[in-house]
Image 1 (tube, one colour):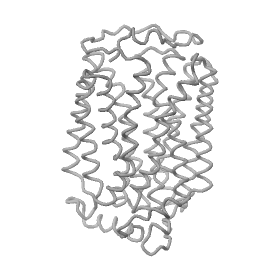
Image 2 (tube, rainbow, N blue to C red):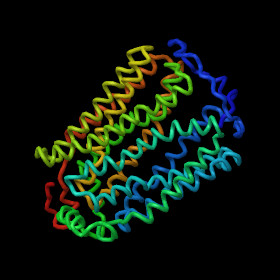
Image 3 (cartoon, rainbow, N blue to C red):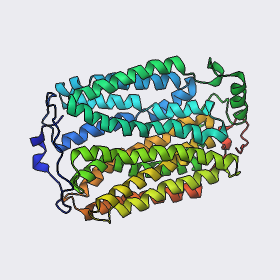
Length: 429
């Protein structure tokens, strides 16, 4: 979307590493309009999504807890899909219009995870939570794996506008299927068997609250909730830093060409997708077959999913220009992060299933902040774009990750909290 000479003056490619390989000549389609956006303007455009996304986290969780997540999630993604279709028009109008449009997309997308958490609180039996939620949320990683290379292919053989048209239409098709196939609760689902309904409802009988009002004060005073907040914030610092800057690191430090970069940037998220699904199975197996307590599994998987990535992230900064090791370490770092999907990521459902959507909204509000400030700080720490500067970026992310893991290990809980039950008597799962 950007004219190449616009960013030529800000070329920051490091010369510390040799050119990795000969450039691959691919015929590019240049019919899409190009814009004269400098690096700062591009940063504002990319970051504007999060300014909308952060606003609807807590309201989304609250609304989902009151009316159910089906329509909220459905229309949230439908809105995002429709706005996506209008992206080329907004870009043509001007930067302000595009920033506003992306902020609106963030508003729609912000209800996604709180609504999903609220729905899972009615659907997921306690001993199957890890498995079900990890399969569900792993879709975000699979989407990254598919959409990054696919977007590149569309840009090369068509033009960039078709990326937005394609994914916008896919989102609308998804909405139709969602409204047709999905129900808020097992009771209202048309095709679930009677036996399965009874199994789900009986497993959740002593865990859900029928209180009409949300216990905001005891909720916000709950240390187990703040343990999830700290862990979520810490994990996302590393996640968003890698998500936004991994392609930059591969291009400007390791000097992979664009075609290699697109594929290699997606590889770590494929590893994370596999890890999320497998760790979900393992977590439930440990609880159901080996009688591990819920809190033990959540803390164990959070430690692996946060300290493991920290170690390999730091290691990636100290192997210099060894391309193979750098890619391997960054891939392992992102892959191990998948363990957190069965750790703190679903702990909201353990401590307060009736308010899981609201809790996720609270923790994800804090966890969105790294997406807004992490890449900015990383850019400011790498003015000369040297390996030593990037080591500092990796050290900071790793230190924050380790702190979050330790805090959650000290203060996390695995049972329903008193304030989340009608009778205020805690119930262990």
